Image (cartoon, rainbow, N blue to C red; front, side, top):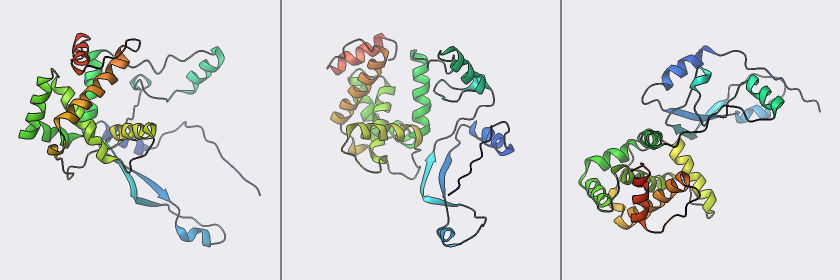
Amino acid sequence: MMAMSNIKRMDSRHPNLDQLANYSQQLVAPLWLIVGEMPQDMARNNGSYSYAFEPHWDTAILLPGIDIYRKLDDRPAHTMAITQAESDIKELTKTEPSWPPKPEHDPASVAAMRERRLAASMPKTLHVLRNTDRGAMLLAYGEELGCAKWQVEQSICNIRSIEFLSYHPSSVTKRLSMIEAVRNYVVEPASMNVDLERITVDELAKQIKLDAAYLLRRAEPHREITVSISECIRRIQELGYG
């Protein structure tokens, strides 16, 4: 058996990428991620042939968007893309590169990121929550707990994200990773039914507590998290996140 490979340095760029970059800058720019499959009859033919891979729409994933950056300085903090020069410096000096920078954790940056992610992934849930009587009731209940409006909206979206899981794994770690993937890569279809009546105030209070604890663990990693939801909310406000 003989195997051959060809490695090409990425020193050129297809013009279509510039078109995709322009499209990605729009406020709403969803994309379909599709896997191309080899035609089934290809394996039955002998000799050399040219085939076009067939898209498999049954497993296609609708993404809220994709980040494309033309300049190095525009790279976000969470990117893993580095240049060859940066890689060489890291190898020579045995130090971590200056890029990507540490993400901002100040209240303004966290609030901006939260609003962007919720609006991109759960637009219909937010619309129903903000424009129905049931939504107003849930928001009022959160206000009674001392919550800010964004805390209720975030918790409702997190509760709703469970409905996007393809299955419910027994592993807690796997379940959390699947929920995180939903939050980052799934766009809520406009045709999807949003039934806020199914969300009880007890379920909402529990999710608000979980979200508050999640934020506090990252804002104050060495501080013990209180079991009281009111104290968690108060501490978030003291830190400026409320």
